[in-house]
Image 1: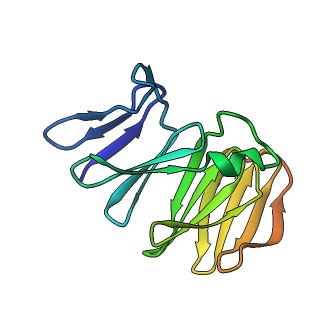
Image 2: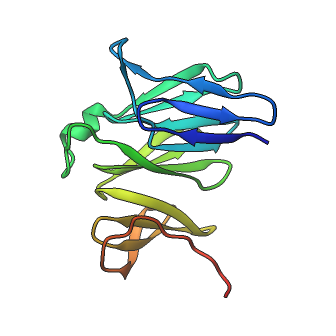
Length: 168
C-alpha cells in the first residue's frame, strides 16, 4: 500500500514501500501550490488546492482533470479569494464531497452535482449510509446526503476535525 502526504507548497508525496514520488502543482509556472487534502476515490486521487480548484490524478499520477469552481466562489457568502479545499470524503462508490472555505461540493460519479452554502469547512465525516457530519468554524452539522438537508446542529463551537465512531 502507498501512503500519500499533502504538503504546504511542495505538492503531494507518495511513499510506497520502495520509492518516493513527488507531484507538484504549479501556479503560473513558478509558484508552488499548496495541497490541503487528498482523497482516493474511483481509482483516482483528488488533491484539494487553493483558488477553488481540485486536481484529479489517475493511477500513473498524471493530471486528468482540474475541477475549477472559481465562478461559484464569486456568488458565495464567504468569497475569500484563495478558497482552499481543506477537506474531502469518499462517501461511497458513487458519491464524494469536497469541503472548501466557501462551500461544500457534492460529486456524483466524478461530476459536480451540487454546491451547498456551508462555509469554512474543516472536516467531513461519514455517519452512516445516509448521513454525513460537517464541521466548520462555528459548529458541526448532521446532513442527509440525498437532499443535503441539515437535520441537526450537533456542536455549537469551532470544529477542526471530527471522527464518528459507533462504539466506546
